[in-house]
Image (cartoon, rainbow, N blue to C red; front, side):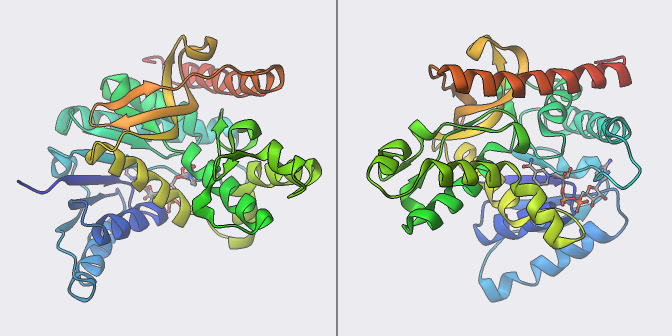
Length: 319
Ligand code: TXD
């Protein structure tokens, strides 16, 4: 059986880390695509030279030609520019929208059967636009944010409870970062819900509130520390988990920005919800009953995504 092919569109900090992880896990042959001259080829060559030491067999290629992503099974998109001082939200939106258009057309022409994971910010709007420009079925295009947000939440909870990260599960809904809605009732340590752990005296509501707040601002905390750029290790590993679930038909239940068609009262919008990812792409959307507080929090996310989409439609008349 031929190896899988993984195309990474955007070979920057996350793209390079994705390539490293995918190679180490022998997920398939890897194409690093970027508009930056030489850089993707340099990363591909550097990573190839790690192969003999690590003992992985994966062909890596750097390119600026969309033809090289032909036949990719998975495409992970990080292409775009970060917000720079003096740049308005709409400036950023306009630039990254154009990037999504080029990437979407590249995917449509070269690998229309791929499973596509978008990471570029502002995530919930960019994944929607990428789906529109690529024309792929909605179940084959998802956004990565929830796995990262819940990983941050799980890390902080495991620290607070002083237990293994492996035994902590977290349930998050909604948009990336600020508008994330953690559901404590469904977040557990070895199956014990967080509210029960509070009753058991393991922590307090105040500490949980502080952890939720820190999780929401998790991206900003890292940006401030790095001083130049944003998080890349955890975002990359989160997207790899989603790609593996598709390639191995694992049917993992993971939070992702998925296209809703009435679930949670939302129609034709990408919002973060738990989904089942298997060989069919997004095979199922997990819809739970929300209490009043969660519903309100979720609505804030939905409103924020809708507002961004309106801005996108104003910037590109084909949307
Ligand atoms: O949870 C999440 N979704 C996120 C999202 C968590 C962290 C970071 N998040 C976003 O991912 C971040 O705001 C960015 O929009 C992306 C990628 O982050 P990264 O840190 O990898 O950014 P880089 O290092 O700037 O890489 C982006 C690359 C860079 O090499 C550019 O040359 C390239 O994108 N680029 C392009 N590639 C292909 N095609 C086009 N048009 C293009 N334009 C820029």
